[in-house]
Image (tube, one colour):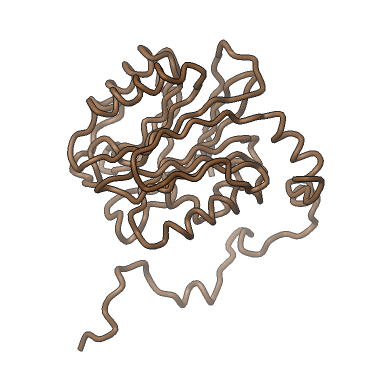
Amino acid sequence: MSSLSVTVATRSLLSTLGIAGLQLDLDKGNNLARLGDEVAAARKRLPWVDVIVLSELCSYGTDPRHAEPEGGAAEQEFRRVARECGVWLLPGTLFQQRGPHIYNVCPVIDPQGTVIARYSKMFPFCPYERGITPGDAFCLFDIPGVARIGVAICYDVWFPEVTRTLAWMGAEVVLCPSLTNTIDREVEVALVRGNAAANQVYFANINGAGRLALGRSVVCGPGGEVVHQAGVGREVIACELDLEYVKRVRARGWHGLAQTLKSFRDAPVLFPPYQPGARSATLDALGPVELAQSNNRT
């Protein structure tokens, strides 16, 4: 698989990173003006925040017919907002079209308003996220002297290989816009905690609220501890992440316990599922990804 890693300059040389996840009670339709106002308000109220993260598909909702080209109107508006607020901005995700393909994309915008990276969701929520092409490039960006940050999107959290690879590539923080409105949100929160603990990273999973999603965004620390668990309504989730703490947990283990990344590094095992050409009779027998049907249909 290919990877994307971007290094850019910043004014901060501290070992802490201020993030704010905006869990907003959005409606269907065009939310661009509301989102810009919310980012500006959060930045004004919380000037110590370095990075603001919005939820998945927050701009226009879940209809791929709203797909724009890279650098389209929504992305241009978010560039303006990031530049005027002087903040790193992950504006949730947008459907973007490249040639015949539509991707679910999270742009990464620096405080000068430059798009320094675009992450395409590796695991569209099939079969529901129909017609969306999966990405194949991991996305990390550096705030030099502060942190290396990885990006994931919603359903990616169900695949531990994504977070493991980001950690292996140096991520200390993973930011993950989400849009979950289903009964499995409780499981998803558990998966966020598990991914954080297994990879000794801060993990911020920012969900929507209102008509689009169920809220309950969560920020977890490198021991899997919950830094903050949001409720179901509108909430600004502002947290200061201690990057020295990440280094200490990785070196000594959480509370002096599991040194997970070292053990993974030193393990002699070659995991069979990841060997070239490997096949599983069990997985092959499961059949295609398709919508579940009623067991009572005749």
